[in-house]
Amino acid sequence: MLKQDIVKEEIDREEIKAVIKPEIAMLGKRLAVLQQKIKEEEIPVIVVFEGWGTAGKGSLIGKTILNLDPRGFEVFAIKEPTEIEKKKPFLNRFWQKIPGKGEIAVFDKSWYYAYNKDKMQHINMFERQLTDNGYVLIKIFLHISQKEQTERLEKLKHDRNSEWRVTKEDIRENQHYDKMLKKYEQMLADTDQECARWKILSGMEKHLALRNVLRVIIEAIEQALAYKKEHQSLCRTGIIPGKMDFPRLQMPKLAETDADRTITDKEYKTKLDFLQKKLHDLSYTLYQKQIPLIICYEGWDAAGKGGNIKRVVAGLDPRYYDVIPIAAPDIYEAGRHYLWRFQKNIPEAGEIRIFDRTWYGRVMVERIEGFCSRQDWKRAYNEINEFEHGLVQWGAIVVKFWLQITKDEQLLRFQERQNTPEKNYKITDEDWRNREKWDKYEEAVNDVLKYTSTTFAPWTIVASDCKKYARIQALETIIAAIEERLEKK
Image (cartoon, rainbow, N blue to C red):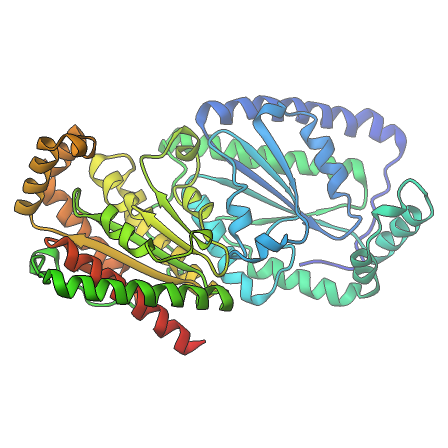
């Protein structure tokens, strides 16, 4: 795929002046026009620059973006992860940098900064999820020969104004060029997917390199615009090549579960005190061992999620947990991949994050209300399983609750809220509208349980007609999950 003996093309100044520069100017104007078109069509674009040290990535990026409206793009120069970034999943910091609809993100180095075989599956999954959801991903690898790299390094080192640009990594790469060549070839082969092809360009001559970079970016954007015009969407179908076969647990349907289990007040008080203290102690163990805990709450309106969460966190150190209430996405969130707003709230290692409603909105609310297409929510089951699998591989404990109440119990709670002044704020017209769609929601939840209750992130259906019973069941489930994880450590 890559050749060490890549030859530098001989181009005289007259040809550069008469042919190459005019074409570059023309391509720059075309790119500026296309930037406005992707803004109108709400197409997000990601351009990744990888390649050899001194291949000219920085210079090419600088000359490429000169053609763009600075209000519509952002450039990210990727360095070694910070201490905080190291405490989160490998791809988390890149998720947080993805552009919104109609915007462009340019990466000077990217998630390939420290590529190895262990990262391959996660990278391919990340890129496929982005392109499946309408992102245009352009990957450019700049290739130069060892001789050319050596000459450039020497030139930089002998200039006081540029010697600082030569890093130890550049020198090591040059000294071990053949070894790095094989590594790059393996990386390119492993991650050259149909949805995200690599474009290998010569960086030997800067004018030709710039022309070719502009050509590649323009071609990719024009193809995306043409495809969207024909299909009205850039999203792929729900059929996923290479789909992971995650081991799933057999779950009962909601109608088959018992929601009216109860507990005496005396037993509740005794168990609550004991379990809260035990969870308090275990939370410090998690912190010491740097194990993150993610707790997900879903359930019927008025099922008692707020009260349940309140009892879970009552004994926890507030410095090490956060509760994230999830409402409808705002304009900024809706302009990005639906998992983006959850990725930015992933806890650091050793911390606890509790989500009051979650990413399952994609396959429940958005499915039923028509906020996304059928192919979007059908594809999301696998995307969610991949997301949670990545969290568990990173080291997190993932606990998922569905708080189950009967339809009659929900009506009683709605009426109580309406008739109690201090609880009026808890009942809205939307709650009543959702209730009218009970059967549709029940069907959607049954699908969620069927397709996303995996061995690594199982669902627990919490019997919630009795709020006190539900609180105890949730605490016991969380504690059991932590203890099981600690036994494996």
